[in-house]
Length: 293
Length: 282
Image (cartoon, rainbow over all chains, first blue to last red; front, side, top):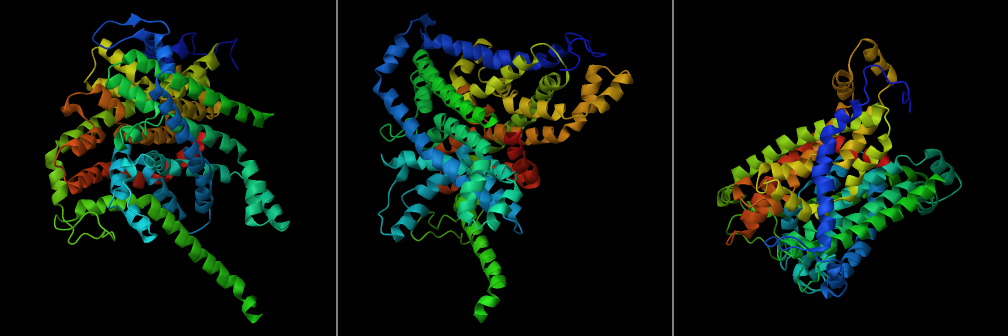
């Protein structure tokens, strides 16, 4: 750090804080303060009407015995498990496809990215048309003799359909992350492997994948966090139904807080979700750290 | 054997055609749902929206449903609201992010790393988890059901500070020193020299900010009660809840809401696409 001792001309001790003042104010009001309230509420009873009442660990005891928390936890983990291959593996192949030196390749990148920039609400409307009983997907399945299914109303299909929507919507983003990684793969290594007689599959496995390790660390954690906090898609497609089949932790928090006004308990579940996300992020830190060694 | 001799050239063409077929098939996967939406929105009432086999070409295409969506809900109002939300949030977001990132990159002071980590910690406070406490903060500030309540939480993001800090720190010292020798104060250096240099990063953040504000749904849903303040995404959800809305009308309303984002995307696609890889690589 240059100039830590001798101060630069025109800078005072307070200069950096003056610059950061608006940012710090917004941070305090919109992040630090709410975070403190969230922690306080997790140990309290609060229904909006009556004043906040400290209740110790009651919410967490209740949480441990609440079957719906376990359903939500299971659904969220299933969400992660289904979401991971769709966002960590499949987009790598998409990226390889749009990394080809072909005419108009930028147009294809753009088309694959389109769902990323459109709103979940709009996309959900489109998906309901695609996946409804008389929709295109059921017609295609019908060609193979499968009967029509109401995917979003079916206890077994609802969650995979929501996961598929989230993966479809985010695939372009993951693709672009991989594309940046692919373009940094050393060309001479690829060439050397080709000369040594490696086929495309071997080049992918032994040259491309190892050099993409830092990229995988990013996509892995991004994917896990996206899946854990999935909420908007559930809200607009299924509202947690049918029969809690798509009840994720995020949706459970919402419904406890803004349907039952059980703010304290909802905050406790929120803290649980937060803890899970921190653990997942820590896991990512370990993975990325190893690359520096 | 003779066939094999000139095979290589033809195979390259065959391979190229095959790749384009694959590219187009994948494109259909990503764009298909939007086309189905557009098809539903332009079909006349006499034509089924669904059915086996799917019949996607409207005969003839009609604009009735766009008119219906426009009048069933206060559509223009929602669009104007969204424009207001974007128009206020994005500039404030850019100014606050640039001001915050500048000293983190260019002024040496004790605790700089700590402040940087503090702002990066925003990443671990995702909006989904902040709904309840932020709602309570807004009630305490008396701001529920106001435009300000929608805007305030959106003016700070870890990505913005991260990218701008990176951009500021890449400015060569000589440029700044020259101005300093000429007697410019720190704010003048920031505003007249450094901000213009990081304009490309600001542009990327402006686009990302526009998209995220335009699409924001859950937070406005929580904090707004008056329909007159709804942004467009909330308006679409409202339209789909209005009883008796025809599937074609809902499709049309949805299509209109997509138009601004898609136009911005088409105009600035290179920047948007390149930003994501760059953000993660940095």
